[in-house]
Structure formats: structure tokens, C-alpha cells
Image (cartoon, rainbow, N blue to C red):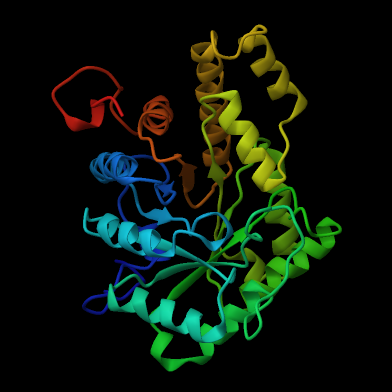
Amino acid sequence: MSDFPPPAVGRQVPVRHALTLPSPGPVPFSVEFMPPRDDAAEERLLRAAEAFHDLGASFASVTYGAGGSSRDRTLRIAERVSREPLTTLVHLTLVGHTVPELREILRAYLDRGLTNLLVLRGDPPGDPLGDWTPMEDGLSYASELIEFIRAEEEFADFEIGIASFPEGHFRAPDLESDTRYTLAKLRAGAEYSITQMFFDVDHYLRLRDRLAAADPEHGSKPIIPGLMPITSMRSVRRQLELSGSVLPAALDERLTRAAAGDEEANRDEIRKVGIEVTTEMAERLISEGVPGIHFMTLNFARATQEVLHNLGMAPAWGTGQDMLRGGF
């Protein structure tokens, strides 16, 4: 018997509820999509969404685009993904928005029944690692947006998640400060967090311990680990640059050996190591009792399905009659 009441008509199942529903493995899995750059990429994303629906994903998230770009495409993609049907989590950042504009966006999400929200401050446009400057009549911190949403009766249907950072946010001076900032968002009304990608499970476990020790009530809210299967050195370097995360030395060495001095010629070997590492991380995280696993897919299905297959949670990828093996 679920502890969650059925959602109101026209509203999504909350993410926390989705995590309790039957799943194809020992823990539920979810996926992340990014707003595509063109129509062809959009169709590929939607084919991946169909595959993940059939594989039993608990929910799918749609990011807001670098620097707050792609607002209209984010909204359209999130609405289409929700019709797969997939429980859909839509991101919202403060970048480039005044408070009245944020209110307008929240109302647009509600009008489409998109009531799962991941609140982020976001990165500055142009240079994600540059200095942060708030908009005039805007907000400075994700916690302020959470407080704003929770204070408005018309937004009562939103369930709010946040990002958390196993290695600490690169702007935080130390892990103690990062813990305070994360707890401020949870205390303001966020119900769970999804981590930035990481490649060392110990970082996740220390984050979980830090939050719970600092605040047993709010710090014990679900922390969903975010994993990105490595399929090429170029893509992982780009994601590391944007996130401020680092590759552990042992993993860097494994990838360097696989590349053997020619990353393009040895892409298959690099990819093989990436799938193996993600599988190993997921197995350990499952053994540590995580509430679910969130895969950063880069809008492709195959690598994540291969990891799920290794975990006993999906059919093998290959030639066959069903669309799950359709080569995208």
C-alpha cells in the first residue's frame, strides 16, 4: 500500500512516489535528457524516451540548457516526454529571469501538468565557470526560489528536488560550506536531491553521511546518485569541465590504457571501460541502499541500456525485433 495519495487530475506522480513503484531491478532507475539542438536530435531523443519507457524508467528529467538557454524547447520536450508516458522532472534555473518571468514559467509548467521541478541556480551564460551576477529583480540562490514557490498557494502542487554535489560545488569554499548550502535548500522545502555526476562512490557516501550528521531530519531526505556512462574521452572531458568534477587517478589510468595513444581509433575500448566502470559503481551503490540511480544519457539509450543489462535490469542490446535494440 503506497504512502502517497494519487495525484490530482492533470498532475504528475511525484518523483518520490515514482521511486516507490515497481521497477525492473533492485532499485528504480531514471534518466536525464538535454534540450536537443535541432529537429533531428529531438526525434532521436524521443526515440530514446520511448525505449526508456519500455525499459521501465521511474522518471525522466529534462535539463534547462546551458546558461538558461532553450527555454521553449525544454518546455516542449518535457511535455512530449511526459506523454510517452514518463513521469517527467523539469529543470528550472534562475539564469536570465526576473521574478515575474519565473512566475510565468512556473505557470506554464503547471498548465502542462509538469509538477515535478528540479530547482537550480544555474551557470552564467557564455562561461559556465564565470562569475555569477543575478538579474535585476531576479533571485540569487536556489533556496530563494524554493521559498518563493512554497509561499505561493497556486504552486502547492509542485514537488521540488535540488542538485547535490558529492565532491562539493566548485564555488563552495569547502565541504562544510557546501553542506550548509545544500541543507538550506532542503530546509526551504526541497524533498530530495539528485547528485551531479561523479566517478568515485566514496564521494557519494561521504555526502550522504555529511548531510545526515548535520541535520538528521532534512539531511536524510533521498539522495539519488547521478551516473554518466563514459562513451568517449571528448564527451567526458566536456562534462568534467562544466561540472568541476574530477576523474579518479585509477579510472584515468584505465581510460588512458584503453586509448593507447589514439582516442579515435580506440573509441570502442574506451567505451568498454566506461560501461564497465559505470556498472561497477552502480552495483556498489545498490549494495549501499541508494533510493535509485539517475543516468545522464546525453540523449542516447544504448550505453545506459548496456549498463542496465549488466545489472540484470534490461534485455541485451543487439539486432532483434523490438525498438529497444534499434541502433540509436
